[in-house]
Length: 189
Image (cartoon, rainbow, N blue to C red; front, side, top):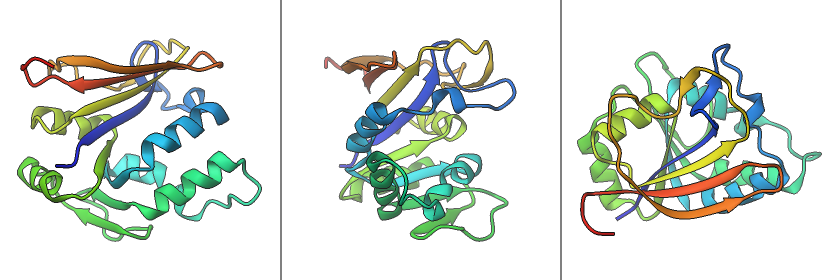
């Protein structure tokens, strides 16, 4: 069975974007980006809400010839994966290998996990909250940026307890800390 992974770049106080919607403070440097690429390489399908899809769709057409190798590599990884976008308003996708669904159905995602040959990733805190509520997320990959933004778009839902078990950690030269957690099912790890 494929795992559903919630991977997020966030501030130390738990936000993916500040009150003004800015998230440039979370842009990974080459060391962090290369690490992310290795985590993303096994992902076969990205699940996105509309806003996260709009942010990520730039990878389809962004010129990367003059970019560092880690950027070029990520563009290839992203383009190769399937994308499933949950949106009630999006009519057509602007990227290849993309399908649109109107509603997030936990049972359908559970079936996808059961039959997927590769792991799946979920992007965006609102969609992730629905997946947490459905008990679908298996792993949380957190890239904690050394900044406190004081509010904004929270990485995690405030009304859903999610017991986690630390599985991996890594410190980067720029102060970013990576923490990987398995979502606890209540059984001994």
